[in-house]
Image (cartoon, rainbow, N blue to C red; front, top):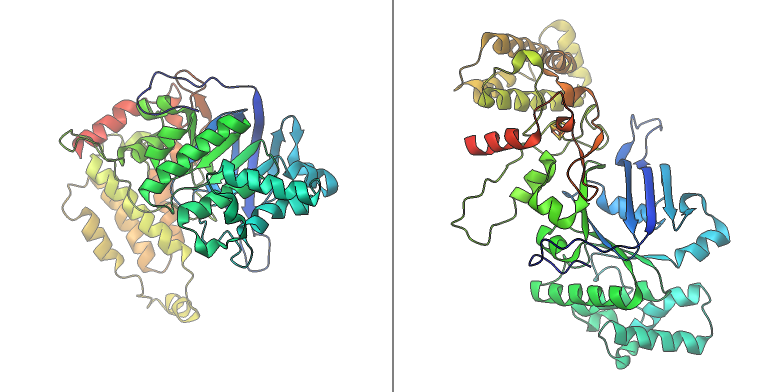
Length: 445
Ligand code: SF4
């Protein structure tokens, strides 16, 4: 495991591949009478994890990172794709084969409060997976639990206590002991310290590092705290709206991120020296619904480096931002269905529910010098919205302002060393690279 920030030149000494994920998808719902489309929680990700390494998985809440972790240990069924564990595709296992494999991969959950059954003693909780797998004799199971209690820094007398008698940090130690009971090779750690006090977090992180060394464990470490990830992880993968945006060695990502989304995430980390100027990239709006992700790049509705269509490269940054915000408002309107009364009013030409779109236009563009080839399209779209036709307004704006990022999914491109990969059109030779664009944007702001 990488020992942290003080050794940026260190690269991981990793073993052979333990887990190979190919085009993994996890979609929920869709296809029913009342559901038009599925929720694409994980939407085609490919990566590998080396034996003995800690791969960090970061991204905003709802980006699909926990779903991905749960799918890797078969707590969720994959919709598509393969997960090869030590050469075996575990997505196809069932029955006894699946039960046997489950020993290899376990999960530690975020909230030690709710993940432990309060009616069972700590000993029973840790012993439960051993009982379920009929592991050795009853006496040996008991001895194993006592060993595990010691391994995670608890005492043998804790065997007969109940979870409510423990602190948050101690409960998380119980959760870790339980996950280790069947001697797994791979652990998914789903935000294992985010519910704990900072001082307790450090102790649990140290415990996880010690256990990894002692038992040759491989970790997927899911987190939103980027400082913790930098400390504990050998490599980092960044997710947004079900897609992997960037992956590489930890220090390569932190020192030289290539993807606009990763750069915006990293820019939010507070600098230890507040007098040092750092440009925080503030992303507009919220991530789109995973039920209706953008057609092109998943990050295209918020990306500060988005590629513009040919005819609009001359437009001022502030005007372009206003166009993007206006498009977002119209997209939201187009998702709302009209009531029967509104539909009738629209037919009679007296629909007025969306008249406030004029206020939106004034708010966004009122103080700007908007060129005619922009304003005419904004006015056309606003008119369509007022007529109760927001979907037509959305389509008009798409036809006018869509660029490469809106129209097609990017590829995962190699950038730099250490298998550094980034999902972005800007790594193609046709476009200016990310760095100058982001630098200009953040200096202007
Ligand atoms: S493909 Fe376009 S929208 Fe996506 S990250 Fe790259 S520049 Fe941004």
